[in-house]
Image 1 (tube, rainbow, N blue to C red):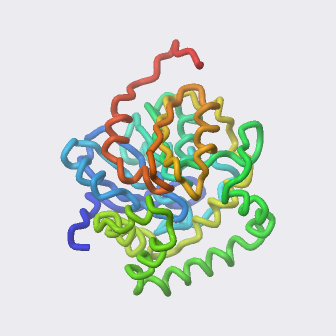
Image 2: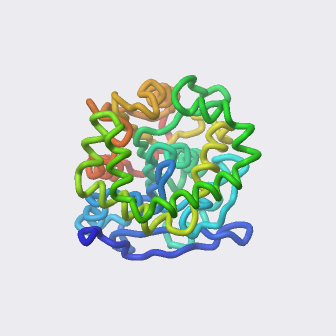
Length: 306
């Protein structure tokens, strides 16, 4: 863990309803900003070490933002995913960020897309790494592991608080054995994720996130699952900012066809296939992802959706 680059700044920001969202920031404060939305589960430090180094070397400001109920963010269930963008606006204003790009890993993908739909004048572009597809409405995609959450949605809605408490306690129990537990998880994953999790820098990143990012509470994943099984509050056609999507063709968590389905329905999106990689493959190309996003400038007012 000695090689893990610590955040340049870490804290929490007041948002609506007397709540707070916690964040971790890497790179110079005056650099162009990227908000990195963690996966499910995950927390604000779920940012690859090469991305942290890139932030310093290339002058990019990367902010990992906790969702409610993880780290020191106040527990809260949004009415839908779109609603979180009002908190995001307050975070951006507090950190003196005018325009921004977003990266969403897996369960962070819907939140990044929501920002593109709600804040087109502030969001220059969105990058999604193995992101989820909607399960409700005109954009819904069927199948995949997320369908289990759809089936259990009534139970999740009713029992989300005790489930969150149980998950928090479980994480606290496994924390002293975090390294061996991560190794055990890696052994049962497909080759792509198993190889990635065996690399010291990625193991260090996940342990840093578990031991430091999510140290206080872990109810956010339950809230995510509840929101993923409801209408998101926007349609994919509403996301008119450029979206760049990366998806492993051997993804065992979010089927590749789900990613292709979303990209097809977005007005301005391209898909990059990560050959032979499974769910976490996007983390291994973080520098390419950031380079691609940094090329996306302000959206032209006369852009014509395809």
